Length: 523
Image (cartoon, rainbow, N blue to C red):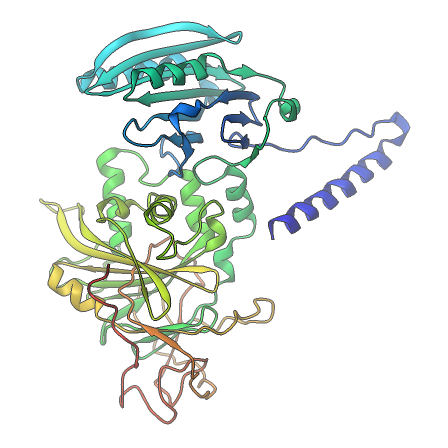
């Protein structure tokens, strides 16, 4: 898919160049426009990082055993360029980020001055105060501090409208010297000559966080728009496009907007006076993630605030796996590192994830789940004290989408009751999005089930090879779009897609969905 997009881009660029040449033939100007580059575009090998946008290289010391790791997009507006971590016990670090200068002008010195003041406030040992130096003909500022056995040196310079910040850190004095030498011996070059500097074995690298170019691509063609609404029959939600069904709590209120996660995000933004999610992450969530259905024991208020006593929530969301180009959904046999890398790539963009306990991957009926739980504290306007809510989140993949199930309740007992739900997943091939038509919506955003039922579904026999699993699963919630609500219909004799959650001739009053509860314990 990506190569196809690049080929199309090449064709369009060629066509545009030809048109430009025709218009400017009299002047003899046929120069094509240079390709657009982004600050986090780079080439990376096991011994060198080479940035395409700024034009510089840093050699990575072999003794430090550095490896690139994923990270979240910073909420301060900076762009993560490189994040590496060495093996234990030294845990060396080389990290690079870029801060847009905007109309402020040079900001490298101010950036480090504030950082050093903040560090001194918490009681670090200052090894070298803020100093100006020169590296490869460029003016740099740097300082060094130590706290316990951890020591680091931070460098910054102003370049092409950005303040570039370089962090070297670790615990071994010899390795620290090598890391600092890597920065002080960095080389600058014209960006168009990167092929002469990248080194042997270099591969494209788009930074540790969400690539800037990916965000631009996703904003122009949001994967979330391709998701069909789904249908709510009684308390059973079905989505034919994704091929799964889920049994929601009976007699609850249903809608398309989550309540707890937005409340946590509002609280975090008020407490820290900054966005809980970075602008790139916000753009990615809006383009990639869609809340399919949300159920609440009590209705949220018009302001979005939620009742505390006897409150409960189940929210199901889906996000395209194309939004995680650098990591794959882990398999139970992939080991802890694959799970850790994926959770960093996914979780740090959701404010509630910092309150979750360690993620656990397990397999159930041939399907891999990731399960987390925890307690989240947040504050609502008008409350004297913060609220504490037990939460759980489960993730699985279905038809190239990450399906998430989010649960929230005042206490663990109610949470476990919510998690004892049933789900069914259809292994059939994905529906052709070119011909699939999303059904009309029957839910009001943020409200309860609409009174007008949809047309009766077409009767279909249940699929014989349906995999069933209980999904103690949660969902992360992005801002839902106006047309993203599931449809609702009165209970009928059969489901409208394979697999059916009811037997032929059976109604919801006769028998509930025959899925399996998710195991309460896993290893």
